[in-house]
Length: 614
Ligand code: F6R
Image (tube, rainbow, N blue to C red; front, side, top):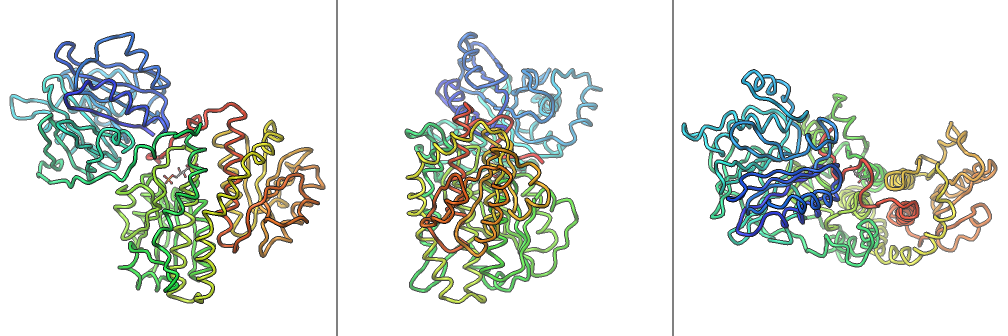
């Protein structure tokens, strides 16, 4: 969603901010803007609808924008349409305030009314302009309310979520930033500071950084910084090393980040698994859970929650927890769970699954469960993210930054971690050492098996090409691979804009079978497993109505060729592990379909990488 990058130091801010905005493009946005302060030109602001490259071109035409302090933003519209007027930065009309903002100011209407009564005129429909005006209204340096104090006072009046960076014409060497609910990192360089909503905009310049906590305000000058709460109580943040390599956020020879991340999965899963399986002891080692092992083992019920791809991983988690750990488990959209006043009894464990750790609905569902007494576990990729901080314990995915908007390596990381958690609890409860050992060995073999699937990429592209003009697809699976079918459909629709539905194969007969006509592609996940014969019957039902079947099958299964037009093979493995393999051809099919249809895979229309509003 929206992205912030801001700079204060000795270098020219403009190229640095534009480069930072380009690194944030993957988050999804529809307009961009920049504000720079310089001795020669004062405060200059430029905005543009569309790509960051449009903004860059406009700046070249304009000239100026020469200073060493500035801020920039990519906006994903929430309040007000996609227009230049609504793009950030926003300014006030009195004190020379210039501000960028991620999040939503919930009481913006009341504040706008108050400010209009005090004579302010608004030029946009945004909640952000309200905040800029409020800070300007409060700014009164002669009576002790400098920029830092004005920001603190304004934020005490604000309800909602924010990450902000603010500069002021009257204090040209100062930047003030603050956070509540939306992430904001301060990169600490050599007499320079780069503030961003995402580490990817910082790491090219410094790997030393600190994350602002909720209700924290930081005043930055070239010489240093002071951090306080909105009530002006001074605090000392801890500067740490960002665990980010520059090559992790660059394409490195691939055409798209999604493609790179699909191919990275053998390596990323080796890192996810690294040191977490102790074959000698026959145990899973999860340091993040160790302290709560006793409570987890006694859990009476597990609730898994997330959104989108993370929900599909959670659905597989539901099968894993019941099958391996034998604990009653439910999986639910975070957006539904948070509002339905759910019953959370004693002994409930909530597992929040999220790549970013910043999904608004997942955070709210987690808080709802915690307020009602659940013990909470985070299954998160981004270190230090909101979910990681708010859960009692957690297991990081360790798959590295995911830049592709369509989630791929995070999904396999989430399923792997959920399998490890199920083994961690199952081994301490009821699951035999032999069964645990079989699953642990199978997990260890997954990276090599994914490599074998990736080697068939050309064949998967050729199969996709044969069907890419079709506008409606079905994805069908049973048991562990019903959620995989849902994930296959989601991948295809989000980047190729082809209509696709994923569902349990048996559900097809209860209605969706009416959709099947001559040549409609139906992708069946038909690996060898307990429901293989049933899946074959479902395939026959599609074939007899003229549908075209693409089967994801287990290596060595020749029988399936008699019922499916196309077969993509994956290596055999125990059923609980199978989604980690069967999903890979589906990711590749979605990728190829999008490329063949000429879409920008890493910037799918209307989508944002991290959905930080509900
Ligand atoms: C789909 C996708 C989304 C996310 C969802 C949750 O490819 O990426 O469906 O999975 O928005 O995001 P996180 O995992 O960051 O909570």
